[in-house]
Length: 306
Image (tube, rainbow, N blue to C red; front, side):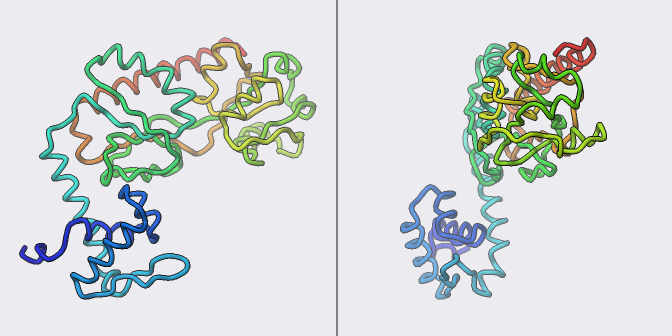
C-alpha cells in the first residue's frame, strides 16, 4: 500500500467526485468546498500520478481513458472506506438525520414528530428537506424518504405506501360540486402548468381533462394547496399533502374517489445506518403513523365524510 503515500486521500476523493458528477461545481458542493479548492486538489492529484485525468471543456469535465477505467473502482473504494469509518466511529445512536421531500416534511412529517420524541425521548431527529436524491452510502444521512416509481435512494429501499390523489377545494366551493360535470364550472389550480393526477383520476371515471377550466398556477404543490384553502379553485392533491388540512376542515373533498399515480413512498437506509437500533425504532414509529393515516382515509371514504 506504499502507493498511497504519494497522494493525499482528499485528492483521490476529488477525482472520484468529479468523475461521478461530471462538473467541478457539483463535485465541490458534494465535498463542501469551493470549485477553486477542488480544482487545486485535482491538479495535485494529476501531478502526483503523472497523468492527465480530465479534459476541461465548456460543458464540464470529460474523463480521460485511464480515468474512465479507474473511476468505478474509486467509487467502490470510497464507499467501502465510508462504511469502515462509520463502523469504527462511536455511533451517535441518539441522532438520526432524515432526508425527505420538503412538501412531505412540512405538510405531514413535522406535525407528527412530537409523537416520535414523546415515545423516544433519547433520540434526536435532524430533518433535511431536499428534492435532491441523497446517496446514502456516501453521506451522513441515515434515512431517505422519497416518492417515485423507482426509489433510487439505496439498495435497502422498502415500500411505505402508494401515492394516491384526489380533488380538494375550499368547503364553500365543495358544496357546488355535486356531480363530475360540475368540475367544468370551477377553476382548476395547476402546479407548474401541469395537471398532475387529473388524467389518472378522470380516466378512472371514463372522463378526460378537456372538461377542466384553467386556473391559477403555482410552482409548488404546497402553495397549490394553500390556494385551494383560499378558495381559488380545485386542486388535485396527494393524500399525505392534504390529509391534515382535510381533518381540520380547511379543505373539503367533494368526491370520494382516490386515484393511483403509479408512484410510491419509499424508506431507505445506508448499509451502516440500517444496523442502528434508532433507525429501526423510527421505521416502526413511521409504519404505525402511516397505518393510522390509512385508517383515517378508509373511514373517510366509508362514512362519506367530505
